[in-house]
Length: 434
Image 1: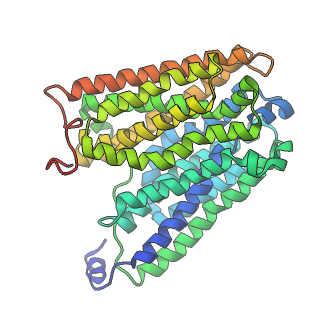
Image 2: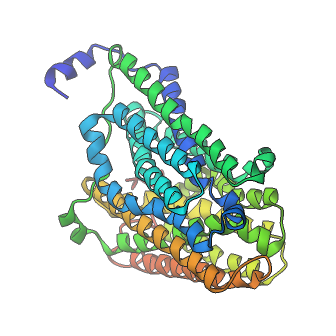
Image 3: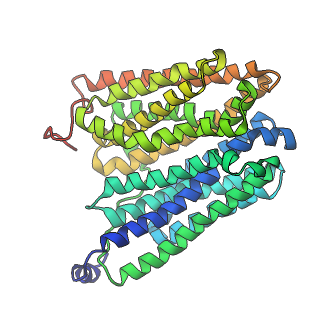
């Protein structure tokens, strides 16, 4: 911002509270569409197999290929946002999300559908970065944490709606394509949110003093060698934990139908419980940890919860509500502690690098394990006539949960030693807040 612009801003009032919250809702609707399109594949996994002859490797590809471009996009997305501005970037990435969903729904050819998911992936994660940047611009120095929480809740409602679409859009599930057409319709929110946000920002820039967004996520190679060991334990926990959850959701509805004989509606509801728990409990766990500390201990507990849930579903007749509830608690607890913990471990000037690298490695894991679980299901001939074929994949997920527990334990050992960063001791009101 130039000196003249700064002087001009000092004579203007800040945006009214109501205006800022309207902006938040509008850009969060773009995120709602984004999350819905991503989760639209899981409820039709069995239809893709029955009606199009897809293998589980094919189905895994459709979600794995989403993560592939994000290994690169997380490095360049912030640069694009900086060069063209938040409002243009939000609309650009929203259009890519919509186009990706439309291409995916256009035909039953695997190559075309995979290309659609690739285009969607290019836009989706960058849209998240753009929306995050916009929220920082409008709420920095105000209700920033609460605004992020509201944004995440609205976004996750998209996932919840998609996973429960077999219930509220049951007639559409007679054909694999119709649910994807619905996702294209919902994906228009990505564009609508971008257009309306553009209008709102243009109007505000002429009337109000606008905040400046924080730095976007970029990886500076030289900084990678100066990040502390505790940070790397968090990164390893991140990739193992998310690889145990999201690739499971790719095949969850199909697994519930073929492995446990549920209806598609109930299978979708079971899968959505993870999202529902996160919407409710993530902010509550965040408040708890801020007050008691012991962050790595909470991450150990959350990771440990994942270890038995997959084996319970593979080998017992326990109600599926129990392991899915346990998974929901884990998915609420670990992310609520893990992402903020990075701020305690890494210098503020390197946070962009730290989060960018963490996201990049996370996407590598998600791509790899979506492929691996699809291969495992095909290798074991998992199907309605051979539900035991899902056991290999369940063991892989369970091992990932154990590895997450191991990395959290290593983190706790480091953070209770002489080189601790305060991860276990800093609490709100202790006088040692970061």
